[in-house]
Length: 506
Image (cartoon, rainbow, N blue to C red; front, side):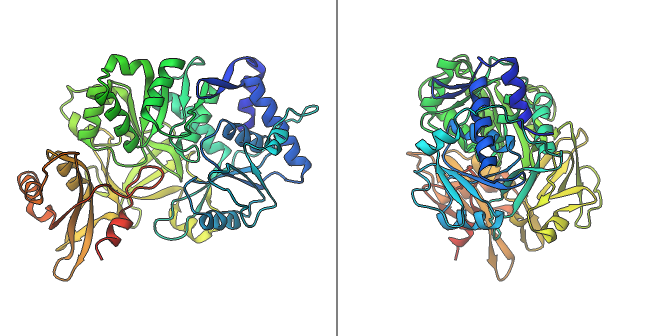
């Protein structure tokens, strides 16, 4: 079982079918994509790289990203995708930990040689052209076992050094097939656009879109420019995309500012799958109102990529359901190939409605952490992945996340979940964004501190925020301090960096 066979299959069926686009220009048909990946695989083998060896991808979103990724899999190698915004020292740590031999880079993110590599290839260079030239003769894809690692994904490392998550061919095959059941149907004439980083969730969704023989579009900017994405959709047909909630907000802002209604938005976007960070009820209600019913939420982790739960288009549209608002605040129901349960600190299942740690079990759960048996043993017990997320299940199977376990605030012996306070703050007039953390306190243990970004031109004050919280939330949950800021610190995937917010408190 190798992911390379997905590309072989479509190249044989439809070699002339458009596959990869650089903006509105076709970069490769399915036949050309396969020929280039096959050529790269042959040259990787000729250079002495053996199945199981690691190859780093440290580049911005690029049309050749997919050609290199499938070329590596064709040769039986393991792809190590690296966040393009990491510091050189962080990347070199990953190279050393992964024992990677080669790296494909773009010069804008890696202008100098990276330490620890046998070879570093600039993706836009003549050297890359030669490596990706069609092969002389046939090079069949290397056979890999289903549980061989395909994608070595390094976690963000917010609590120390990142850990390498070993994602197998079986994991990604299962993820791809699950997309069609639980997220969205895809036909060959459709297209996915890679605005979010291809080193993360957006790049993983190349698997189902290749399974469907659809088109893959890389914006010329290589990132998220709402005007560019809307224009691409109008030019190439409605696009689908994976987006963090911050990206969704930018798209919705653009639609509202330019006066686009739901029907006009439908000309640019078919489906926007959102995940990777909390989507607040007020934000998804606004997105649905302005852009229409083209949203699906997924919840997963690097350790169970893109697959844990899903909140479908149907669930989002079911406004007549008596628990509709609660469902909007949830992350949906377990996706088809996994089980989800809530457990106490010992892994024992808790009754419906009780809050505990979210556990996931199934064929998308990672093989373990690379060269870290202790962390693997802690994260996977009796086949269950202990996610570190805190949540509860209702009687219909909908999972509502409270927070990461490390973000829980315990004040005066009472548990306070930051997301609950954030939801209230976001419903206050004049609030654009909000994030809540706990600050050490000698009397209470911790107190609630809210960082709030006002809307442009808003006369928002601390007194207004406090009055709003007193009206909508229990007094013990109310922030003891409000900090008005121009923006919240975020990582490359749109997640608020609460560690940085906590450091601002000292």
